[in-house]
Every structure is written in C-alpha cells, then in structure tokens.
Length: 138
Image (cartoon, rainbow, N blue to C red; front, side, top):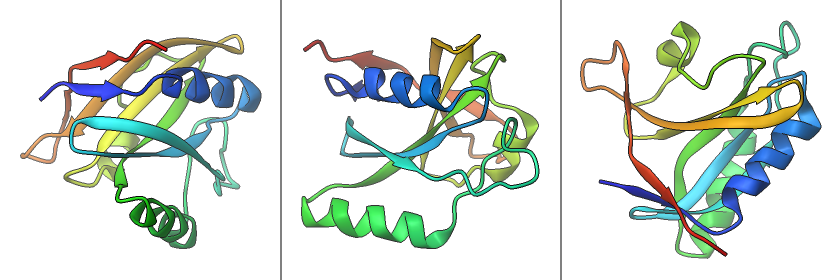
C-alpha cells in the first residue's frame, strides 16, 4: 500500500526537526487508512542521549490517541529525526519498533531537513521494510 502524506505534513515535520536540531525530535503520525493527515509533536523524554535517541511515555501517546479518536482517526505511526545522519533505521530503531506502526525518519543535516523515508517493521521483527509514499500537494 502506498501511503499519502497530507498537504503540509512533511513541512510540519521538517520545521519540527529544524527547531529541535541538534537533538532528535519525535512525533505521532495521525490519520486513517492510507492517509497521514497530521503530525503531532511529542516531547523527547530521553535525558541520557537526546541527540541520538528518543523516548516517549505512555501518557503522551494516550493523549494523542484520545484526541485522534474524537476525530475518527488514530495513530498510524511515529516520526523522528536523525540529526546529521541518513534517514535509515538504526539498530535501536529496529529494536524499539512495534509491529503495525509506520516509522518516518527525517534526516536533518546541519539544521536543515533533508531526506524523508517511511518504514514498517518486517514480519520477522529483525529489520525494517521501506513503505512507498506520495506527498499531497497544497
């Protein structure tokens, strides 16, 4: 299935990544079916290595899920940045991925948004598989 990033969604993720550089930023991808309609910023709760890791607590996720459900939507996945690194899943990304969710990775090079990739955990659980996507124009 080809996913659709709604108009303005990639720009919103890019702005979040640029503002948070040189730290990893994270957010939820909210939508329905094959559409990603909204990026919801989440707080990176990692206090040990926030420039290379992110953590999000269950209270943040539950709040986004409740809000999305009121609109007939749900959390389809998450996005995070790789500051000054390529937009490919790390071993940590693979190890923390949850089956069924999408994972968008945005590389932010020298503070500027660069490549965007979209992934899903393989059925084997040991690697990520790329997910095709299109970006809706404004």
